[in-house]
Image 1 (cartoon, rainbow, N blue to C red):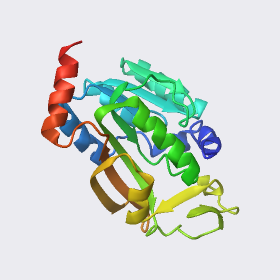
Image 2: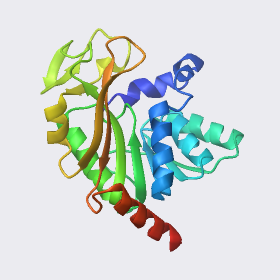
Image 3: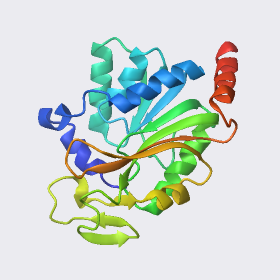
Image 4: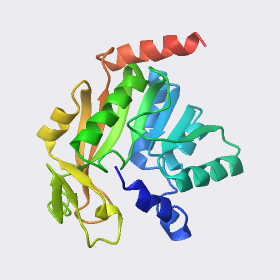
Length: 233
């Protein structure tokens, strides 16, 4: 996973940060469901300049964020201080997260984990499962094979492409999936929902997915788990 090299430079400019300051409505909707379930500890994986990590802190969650780009964490820390928000922020590798087992009720990876190949994704997902509590929620986006960039450039690994002439992060590996790939790669998770959604740019299809880790099979079970855990602290 090398796309952070591009983003570390982008986050240092006003123009690079401009489109990444507001939380996505889909994430905001999931936050309301999480609150009803009694979730408390949340992690934004690949938090960038902190739009979602700060949003969760504002909503009363115990919020953490991690990114491989130091510039992202610097910007997020500056903004959290300006807004008097408490957010735990770290620079770190997604395939070796600096958190104890079963630390979080919820983990978000928005436009992050597809920056690499299947091997790096599997290593990251193993860490996601490790740091989530039983019945924890994993919300993520994955690039769809319906995306207009699929197949462009050099296929450096199955379904993974680099565009050597690109002027953005697509010079780094990007992994694309269809529905079958999505299920195959997320072994050990229970899929709650998946929508192949178009983002702002025409043809920019991404899977919007919500998964659950083993330990609860229904929202009611999750609610009991989170509520009981929160009540003991």
